[in-house]
Length: 308
Ligand code: NAP
Image 1 (spheres, rainbow, N blue to C red):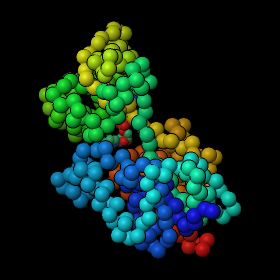
Image 2: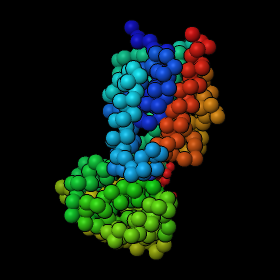
Image 3: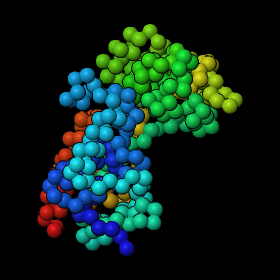
Image 4: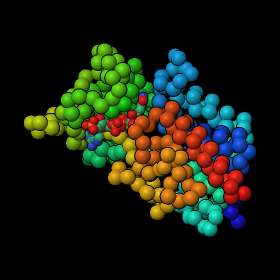
């Protein structure tokens, strides 16, 4: 027996929760499925300063707790630890499978976001949890007063590098070019801390150690010289990728693997909408995820009202 809801939202980050709030407020019966704990990527962000309404910034965890609370107040049903394996279109309905459970709905909003890209160098997998990390906010404290490396030059690398700089002795920022991609305000702060050393034009070739990380081996992209930098941890921020395998052939993807959506956030399958980082878009922020969630929620509401 499968459980039926008019709408199912898959993914419990800012986009999914906002879609859920909009759908609930429109009187739609909606279930939100989250593969882990609800809250999404912002749970791993120490401080969010560019989400309007919080002039002094807010911790990612607190912001998400508030949004979850808002959802619950409107009667949003959230099911955690429910990873979706597949979605099948069956006539007018969708069948969503997670483990041995199946949920059916008239429409869907997919908001499963992205996952961290791996470096793919020897030692990365071996030392994961023993010095290799993808979350400075979660693991930074273990390396208080030690030297660590951050890999990457985007917003995530610099923002998380700044978080680490508050805790550790020194942060080496390893970047493959000689200028950062991150927003200027983050760059200015990073150059000012005095605790971040920039290793330009370098790519990691190996992470080394015995029981835990002890060093990172780098290759210079210009002269191919190899150097070894002693560090106790390596934080990897080399981008993110949308995981869309569970969507089968229901959506179109762009060359980078993001879901292509219309202006109304519809996809090529009627009744299936996308919102947040999973979709092809030019800016991935909490503010844009929330906007997507609202738009997808309202458009799915209209679709459901027609089908009811
Ligand atoms: P990103 O913007 O794609 O940056 C990835 C960084 O890793 C780039 O500097 C890239 O170098 C480098 N890189 C990629 N592959 C590499 C490899 N194999 N070896 C070494 N370096 C490699 O990804 P992100 O920083 O994770 O951010 C993802 C999205 O979330 C972005 O849209 C970002 O704006 C957003 N975000 C925003 C905030 C914020 O607003 N505060 C915080 C975090 C994330 P190149 O520069 O040479 O390409």
